[in-house]
Length: 123
Image (cartoon, rainbow, N blue to C red; front, side):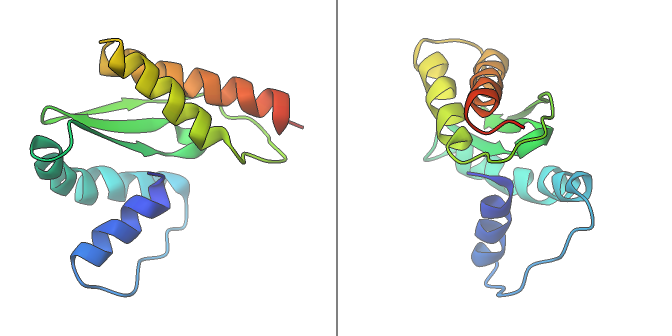
């Protein structure tokens, strides 16, 4: 899921209809790490082996076996990022199913999404 989806999911679980407005992406990321990831750790320990939150130009987070992993990515000035999340997910899952470490999975997802944006949506 992406950052905004994780926030919407969090507030839906709490039964709240309004969500906070973040001034910066860094502020949003901090909220996700401090407020959402602890809740998702419990979910990842049960029904889902791994949960990934894509943070756009700030990289991605993964929750796996009670740990939070964060991999930054290189920012790019893009006209469009449509499809980049799908590319990230495909690359992450390919590595995950091949038994790679979570860090390697996140790095692969970031790399392929970045390359995709350069080719299809970069300025």
